[in-house]
Structure formats: structure tokens, C-alpha cells
Image 1 (cartoon, one colour):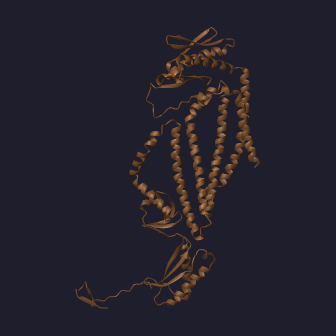
Image 2 (cartoon, helix red, strand yellow):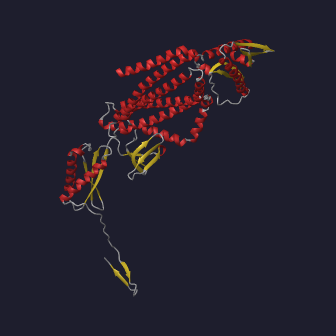
Image 3 (cartoon, helix red, strand yellow):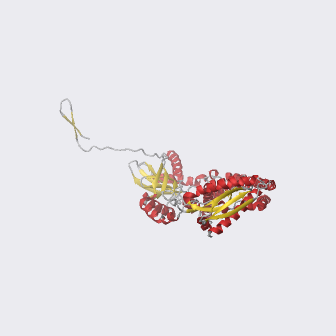
Length: 550
């Protein structure tokens, strides 16, 4: 608790120090509005004659805005920037030079002039488009530009004085110290979070653990993963934000700040949306695991149905995570397109038509999804069951709304579309049964054989190891058939799910030894051939017929 409070006070102190450091130079930094990072509409790039705004900058700060047709804006900005750079360098080098900014009207268009000492430069002409940008008349806009220019040039010269630079250097040093303290504190907790996450890694959880325990571990891992990524994001945010702040403190580096922000605005927006989508997806996983864990550990479940619920919960949890992942990726994609300027309105409006087209083109996929949903809802089978479908069968390794994957006895992975699953034989739902057919010879005393088989079955149920796998008293049904090998005696043994094959193998092993001791043999396949008619035999030498009868 003390460490958590220490971390909180450390981060809060760093933020407070940075905020206090910003106050003396708040007016020196470009605001978001000053940056004027116009986001182009990527779906509307047709109008070269469209009037668009632009910014005239000095030391990276926007002095004023102008407006021109899109095709002429860049050339006009370059022309004004060149003249402004020329006259401002003269003003900055001459400490005693007097600055004067005025307007002169020739005809109907006001011109802005900047004078430094005895040098005068016509900076620009004020147009109706410039005035319309601010919603004022052309003369009022010219007066505003004169005032903005004079204030901006005087402020830029003041920022180049040694007193100002010394104060800004102190602010930069304090900001750097605050950044270092905050990053070190967060780095400590980030490493602790990573160690905790590694201890809860899904690969380390034992498959023999109860499903509720596994889901709880997965939930904790997802929460730790979000926490770990948040710490990393906080470190990156402090480093990048603090660096940009320091660059913005000085007139010589402020333009670098603007270039970085301008160059990274689209990748940064997309990256933030992607990271937010990832974190929200992980939090959704944690919520799904939490809900599934509560359901799996419900005390109202009977021990016999507990395993089925655990398998079902595991399958539903996996399907729910798949749906959540697809949903959040779709939402994140739309948000990413929106933040970079793409008009997603037409995309959303056309979603209905796209949905109809997709549904017509993917009817089989929809059938798979619907059938898969009812398979999960009705608990027909789950991951970990052994099923037979048509002429194939095996262990269910994976299933979702579209496919079911089985691993057969030969190790082959069989993939079946859910729409093709009509009749299912589940060999491990709730309980299983070992169905044994024991052949004995016809000359064997059947009652003696029945008693011996029953004794072997009862002894096996009293064995400590096998008693846990056999759910009920074995049933010796009696003589079930008269076959070519002899008399067939049928035995049923009810077992735990998936344990019928182990129990059957052990029962056969014990029964073979008991039959040998009792002198009862297991008959071999035999066949009798009867000749009931006369077969003519003809000699190949003399052609005389030889008849034989048996």
C-alpha cells in the first residue's frame, strides 16, 4: 500500500511540476488551434478551386491565417513566408531597430507593409477570402493582421533574449527531471506487472486443473496484460510528450516540434486507436473469463454434470472471445478511418447493401454459423468430447461457429463444416459405457462362465484405482448370441466419460487370466464343410469318370 501511494504521489508531483513549469511560458507554446493541422477529407479531393485556410508561421507558431483556392494556397504561403523570414531576420539582428507594421490601400485591396529601421517590405495583400475566413470585412481583417504581425514579431524577438532563454532552460531541466522520475517509477511497476503476468501465462496452466481455475488464471492474465500495456503507454506518453514540450520551449526548436506533430499525426492516431482496441479486447476477454468462471463454479451443479458444464463453458468462452475480437476489430477499423479524415457515413449507409450481398454470397457460411450456434446452445458436444459424425469420429479438438475439428485414432485432424453435421453420436456425454462381448466355447458350462465373469467385474469395482472410474455396478446381461465361435456373453460397465476404453482393456486382461485358471477357453473361429451331393471326378488320362460320395 505504501508503494502504491508513493507511486501515486510521484506521478502526481511530476505532473504538477510540469504544469507549474508550463505557466510562465504557456503563451509561448502553440495551442492545438494554432497548430491548425487540417485533416484532409480523403474521399473529397476533387475541388482545386475550393477555398481552404492556411497558416503563416514564425518560429513554429501560427501568426495568422490566410485563405486561398486550394491550387494557389501553397505558393501564396511560400511567398509570404519568404518575405516574413527576410524582414524578421533583419529585425532580430538589430537590437535598436524600430518595428512598424501598417496597411496601405491601393484601389480596393489593402496591402500589409513591415518596416524595420529604414527597410520596408510589402508582406502581403489582404483578400476578400482572408476576411471571409474570420467573418469580417476586408478593412477590419487588415487591421487585425497588422496587430497580429506586430505582436508576433515583438514576441519572437523577446524570446531570443538571453534572460528568456535562461528561464526556458531551467524549465526544460525541471521537466527532464520530472520525466525521469515518473518514467523510473512507472518502469518499476511495469517490471512487477510483467513478472506477475509471466507467472500467469496461459501456457503454464495445467490442463488437469478445473476449468474454473483455468478461467480465473486467464482472467487475471488478461487484466495484467492490460495493466502492463498501460504502463508501457504511460512511459511512451511521458517521454514523447515531455520531449515535444521541451522542444516547444525554445524558438529555435519549436519548428521541430511542429514537424514531428504534423508528421506523426496520422500514425499516432491510428496507433492510439489500435492500442485502445487491443486493450478493450483484453478487458472483454477478462470479463468473459470472469463470467465463465462464475458459471463453471456454480455450487448448484451436481458432480456428474460439472464436467459437462466445464466443457461447455470452455467452448462458449472460446466462441465468445472470437466474436468479441471480430467486433472490436471492426469498430476499431471504423474509428481509425474516422480519425484520419475518412467520411465513414457512406460506408455505414452502404453496410445494409453490403450485408445483403455478403449474405447471398456466403449462404453456406451462414448455415455453418447457425448450426454451430445451436450445437453450442443445446450442448450436443463440446471440446474434449469423443463423437462420431457420419463415417468419421474422434476427439473434438477445436470448434467454433463455422467448423468442428476432430482428431481420430490415427492422429488425423478432420475438419467438418457445422452445416454438414446432421446426426451426432456423443460417446462421452455425462457418462460412458464399456460394451463387452465375451465368447466362450459351446461345451463350456454357461452358468460357471457367468459366475466367473461376474466375480471378475465385482473384484475390479473394489479396486481403489478403478473404483473411481466405474460409476455403477457392472451388469452381466447373460447369453446374448450363438455365433460361429461359440456362446457370446454380454457385459455392460458404466464409467466416467472417456474411461470406457481403459476400463474395457483392464477388464479383458483380468478376465483372460481368470478364464485360464478355470480351464475355460476362448474359442477360435471354426468352420465345418458338408458335401451333400455326388461330385463327378474325371481322369485326364483315360477320360473315365470317377464318382465319389461322402
